[in-house]
Image (cartoon, rainbow, N blue to C red; front, side, top):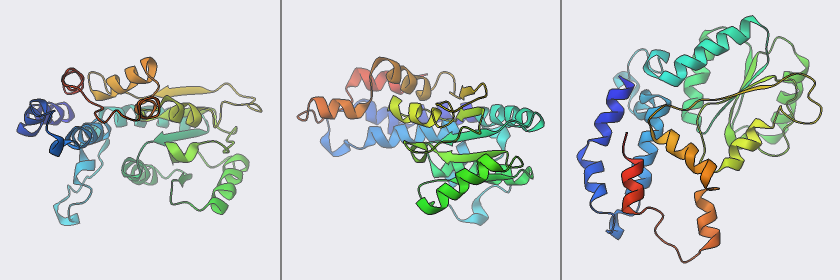
Length: 236
């Protein structure tokens, strides 16, 4: 289902029109809009229904079986829970964090959630609680909240659910547990949906630093996407 929805969007009139109107300044935001849709589809197709009325959402909204990455996350999290590991799960958006949050609550696990809406004073209490309470299994976090300053050496498993354009964002999140003071072996998982825009984002992490670097290096540049680049992004 996820694959079919992704393929259908790539074949949609909106994407086709985008491919042949890259020089139209009035459509300057269309590539970013389409990329956002594709990234949501890679995480979980149900996210596209997030803002529709509750009565129009499927009763099983956020079902893991509709997302390949979520099925992998479910499997490894269940294994780690049985083995008493301590886990950090990072996602780029609160939308996906909501889906993971709802699912984790149904498992009956003791866990914490930290995102951009969490007050700074509460964050430090949560860090202490996670470190000192062996019953708390994991913290689910947005990637940017896991930036400089958070020390979570109690964790020995880290999951990056989706890649960021900026490699430093993922690196900072990863190093919340993998840092000086860590006494356990840390395993880090990066989940990427094969054959999708996520692979291309990761490739750009490796071969380019990030889109923002282009702005800093060349302030006059006002087009981030050229036709050949768009053809690469919106292809399987």
